[in-house]
Image 1 (cartoon, rainbow, N blue to C red):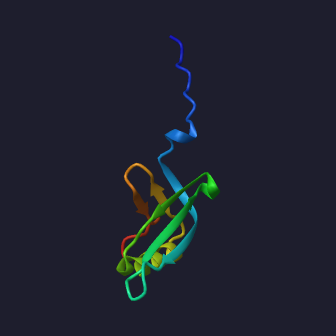
Image 2: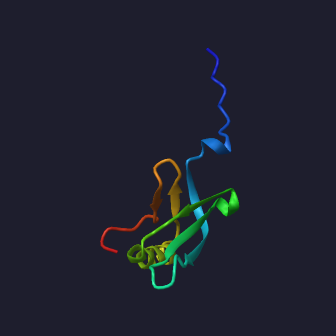
Length: 90
């Protein structure tokens, strides 16, 4: 029996990428109206980018998690940010 050849994984098949940088922005909608926050996620040092639009309430929590997590990943299929592993009780 021959061993099957290992298939090469293409960049398009990678659905979970490490967040290596991020750029928060705020855009004014109109004077006196709440603005819009966006966060551009730079994935794997620029291999891909993705923009999220957190609420004003979520932006502070998101900023803390991005700052305090040693590693952050983004699942492109499920649109989920994952903030590294933590020990129970930490």
